[in-house]
Length: 628
Ligand code: ADP
Ligand code: ZN
Image (cartoon, rainbow, N blue to C red; front, side, top):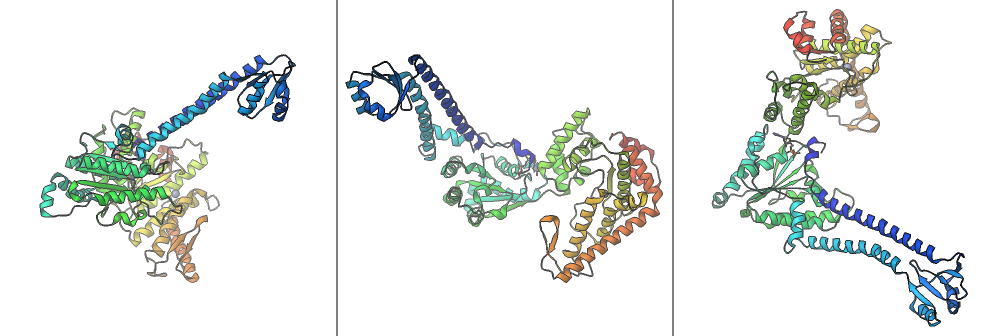
């Protein structure tokens, strides 16, 4: 999930990894410290024992041959022995540790010693890690044996890690969920069941055991599941599919068992499983034979089949890839109820904004409906984040309450990136102003069929040097042909204005994204929506290939050619239209450009005033000091 809230989600499996890493770390330290120490001790010992003469080197066969000559032998680690010969020559030998040899040497009156200090250290260094690992393995084994007789250790690992045990009941209720009323309604039945199992039993009504919530990240799946528990006043256990795929084979199975055990003991309850696709991915979908995951999935299926409806456990799973799930999961008696949570619509966004706005001090002039209009495609989590960013911005600039300008700034930052402190040449700034003025003018000209202009700016942000933003009045479900043609003109008006004011050889690359968007809109209208008479109502599928080229599938070469020609026709017509509009109204466009150079940002109202030639003084002051 690219969701910002992700960061705050408790990934409790990390604790397990932490423990493992901690142990590995300790082992490493032990290893370094003790082996290091050991060598040092050995070295000093060698240094002390060796007399001034440098020792001669003896091979093992030399030692065997000259066993009689040896006076002392001190056996070090790594099969090294040092000592002196009977004639006083120090030696150093490589030996194989072998009792017979020692016996033979000592029989001849030599003193044989084993370097105790060294081998003690060495022993510790060798054995401690093994001992610790053994203890760790023992602990894991107990863990894997599952919950039946696991006792304290098992309970503490599984109980605290993937499972958030909400011992008190969750306080979240449906009141905390806004904008998805239909989905709430769907889940009301589950709440009723949890509250009143007996009634359902006498009626013989079948209540789903498993509910699958699908939807993009941040659409409120977790929130909704929690709210069901809160509404029904039952415990909520949350876990995530990604917690079950561990480094230890068999751990997933044990964890599944454990969590269902826990649920059974606390029924009626909600068992929430986020990111179920992590274990429930279709078996054919992954190429590597991931046996562990398969076992975990099987265990989940076994558990789902294993409890009877009366138990009162409702398993709610969430995913943003329902298409990836193994069909076995969706069979009756498992996750047979699917609820898809869409991104919130306009009203939904307003409601979610209003709900979260309670946490902040929001200025009175802020109109949440307006904010909702500018946030098409935002999820609930995105909206929450937007308000948070706005509040941060308000603090940064020293506002007492969150103002419209703070929200505006936060939104632009989320959508387009932070303001760039790019040094721009004055002529580039000027050209940008005329470019945006072209968009703004043609946009205003078509304001009865296109989305009203929200603002125009020449403050660079992200990759854009400037921009004109439109605010839809409503969520779009479809577009009319005249609206599409008007939009194409608006898209190309930036370039048109550049050409008219600066000349055909001064046009810039600044229209790149305008042209891309216009082309895409025209292509979709022609090849998919059947809006072109020349091509007709034929769906010409298009496949996006690498290198940005679009290849046409399902189309003869001839069709492909005429599609390309038709797109060109549309764009040429739009460009011609935009150029006519700008050149006929050069003075007005110039006025807009000068105002942009002067103020950097113009509100929709200011633009409309300039275009219509009327001036209502009061509005201008309010906006112009809101933005620097
Ligand atoms: P998901 O599980 O779908 O990724 P979450 O339930 O974790 O999304 O949503 C993250 C946060 O976004 C929630 O805690 C909540 O603050 C906010 N949120 C998302 N959807 C809604 C909604 N419909 N109403 C209110 N808040 C929402
Ligand atoms: Zn442009």
